[in-house]
Image (tube, rainbow, N blue to C red):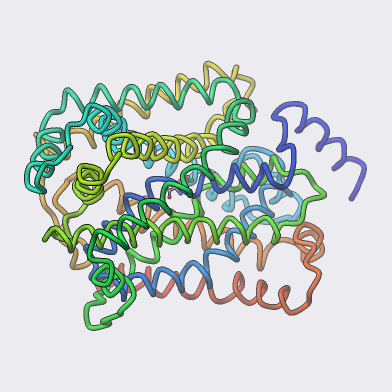
Length: 464
Ligand code: PFF
């Protein structure tokens, strides 16, 4: 590497800081990946899309597209060494490429803002459920009354706004203090605790609920159930769950010290993220079937099923409260990464970090009101790729980001890495020791990911 690159590196570290170790990067990126997407969204999407066939498409997308694109995005971040927009500018200069590629940074910044606007409202539900569980609101209640409590919550915009505001404030406070201080520490303890609690809930699902029915639903694939809509949802979700295609992982990659090997950091992130999603499914569906609930309930699914388990199990008030606390933490560590690309960019423009955080936060909060009202006053139904959506703006923002912006961002990242970056540069970043792995990665980012996602997008445009 040239001397000037080394100088840039020193400046960058001075301005933004960097992860203290490979392990800290893995923890932070896993904190970004593991969130509402795994515990709330994955089960409800699988439930809506017929279970097994959706899960298989999702797993294939994670393995064939998710892992290689994750490695590509980390590499771009570390090579570009700035916020995604400026990192892309650096990389364009290095590769003497067209300016168009900065679009990766811009679209990522916008997607992060849009996702956080609804993410915060849902995280607000989880906040309410901490208190409801702690106060014993669910103890011994039948399923229909638990469902009724959820319906009452989302029907009340005032409550939703309060909790959305609380969550946004939590996100802004941490962001203002800098991601590494606090977050590094929190993530280190909270992610293992979340895993432990999931395993405990799994024990409940195995012993007290209809485990076999849950397993059959998740793993027995009836491909006749796989519609085009569920197929693209599964693909989009692979990007969403790994936080790919929008610069979050790129900016985390920028904070990764040069001497850390990328593949050995990427694999544990993918494994942990997938494990949490599957565990969540294995907990939720047995409870759904044991209580005669509807697997296709949609966004309300975990808020209707888990309280049943907590309402019945010994010590459920205690464990339930801890569970929702951890869910909020999982959402928190993801939420922070959603706007870090925007914050880093504004900081590079010379603004103070605090002012940038509160400016972005206020705007996101305001936009989040569209989601708040999607569940009550402004709810409307529409159809997308054969899927019936009933929560207006919320569903529309979700589709725009997960199904359109992230996959397109992801393929642009793959193409840039595979075709535009000088081979030597990418070789240096990835430092893959095995030529077989190098070949696999090259084929994935050059062909499999771009062609796979493009085919799906073309279908989508042509109206399938
Ligand atoms: N991966 C997060 C989840 O599964 O909840 C959501 C997310 C975070 C998406 C950060 C995108 C992102 F950049």
